[in-house]
Length: 182
Image (cartoon, rainbow, N blue to C red; front, side, top):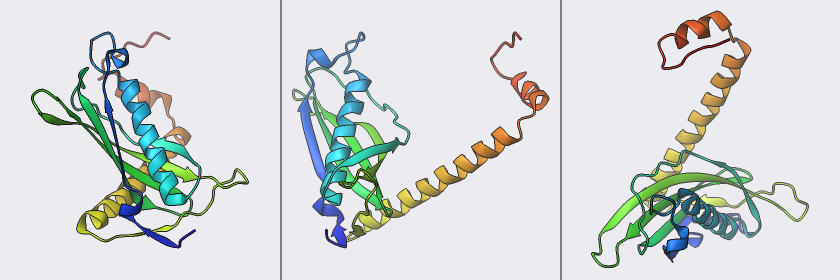
């Protein structure tokens, strides 16, 4: 295993034609199919960087920005944006192209945290990342910020669970669109 690898060594694009069997009841491509493709491209990108098997540890928010139609060509571009000791944050951008009109639209962006797994079935160290462009530096910095925000959120969530005050929460809920029937 190399100590460090450039971002470009593991970048990957997966392109697939969207067929009718991928559609949902509304006639659009099912979000679950897009998520499955995202997981696949995240795995390949992470496996290339780590030289081995990886698992999905978490997925940051996935917003469906635009629907994907049957007959469109979907491309998923994945890149290692950040590496820790055993984990990698893989940035994924999804675009679809109408083959008749050549209109390209951005449909999704998400960040998958992948963990490298060794032959002993335990997390293994991954190579560091060589940043060769301003985009590489920006993506690494943004991923680091997202990671720190996520850690802060986890701490806040744990603190809220520890200081749950029924009356305070019931008072807050009075202003929300819910009905309490105890």
